[in-house]
Length: 502
Image (cartoon, rainbow, N blue to C red; front, side, top):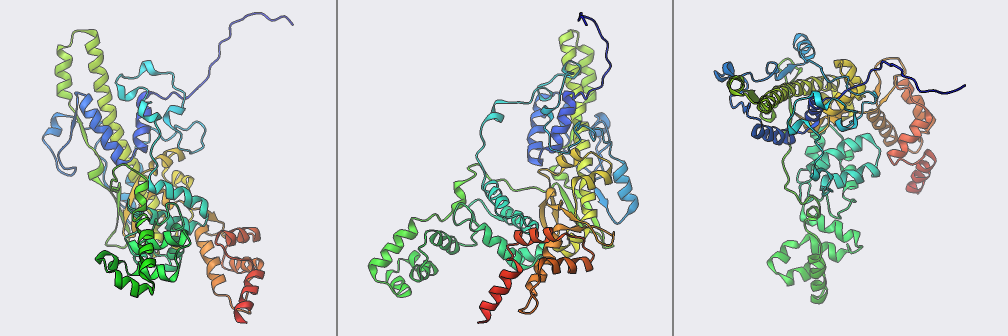
């Protein structure tokens, strides 16, 4: 068959990401600190934008002269025990960017990954163009928290340890010390002190050596142990560091039962150690995390979810100034600039409003589904994933993923990133609610801890017990969970008990 050139007409659909929509997505995944910096930059560049200095709950005469946004300021509080309040919060959000993920993967795909061919139709302005900047291609100095998190995710897959470890890493200061007591952390999380102690002990084995210590003595002991120099004499020396500070050489000799030469060698060894190991990472200034959402207990026993208004930049669009400038602008180039800047100002105000509503909506759903955690602690975390939340609030998984990134929730149990509350699930044998994988692991540990010489449980026996308790789980899953908890097999446990009994 001969081939010849011909013309064909085809009709197709494709997702077009305008620069304004890219900006809305970008704002959604920014932290509150990054958002404040971005808004400050826009206020400097756009003549029609002004900062709204009036309190969020107070009416202002200036609001009568200028439109603060495309929509009204979102309600900053949702009472989860009030069905009407919860329904109103769900229905009030204009989800304009909930279906922007063409792949449907729910991943944190950057806006620049989408195909964009409508640049000419969008308003001008540097903020809405290609946001790839030179400094974005530079390597970033790794922070101490990032360095510890990378090691922690390799060291364990136990969800309970991952949850507790993430919290402990966030509590470690820039010097590498954990200043808060483990008892207080366990009480706050509703976790067993043994789980917190085990997780802390794991973190203290990470690089840099000495990280996670609660005081200087513990920091030095960790480094000496790593160097295989933590003998009884050196241990006594570290326990009496106050004598070194006083220059009491004879007191150190007495405490360590060593002669002067040995004590001077110990002094030299200790002075060669690193008293603040965390300073080796994260050379930049450390900034405190500001929560985006507050969760408080309501008088009726439920929970109130409230936006932190201090972290929400509010802007006004000066329509009067736009009208004045438009009236005197004769040049076509000037008119285009005025129209573009006014369009950009309105879009920014609307995007900020949309971002606040979305954060409140997602946070409220997380608190509703993880109510048991706030009441009873970490052992009662429910299985939760992005799809659960997305389906409940009728949004796309990718939107939920962006909202939960770099957003923090202040609760009676502490400050948590929203991503903390997503856990795997195990099906229920009775057809009821699924069980959190963390809770199942915790139950397996409880069963093993309660063993005696005559009641060593095999994996099959553990499966039978869990089935009776309504947890549908396979034997291989029990074996996998047991290994992640570093629990030996039933044969090894029985042999260890027999040896200890001899």
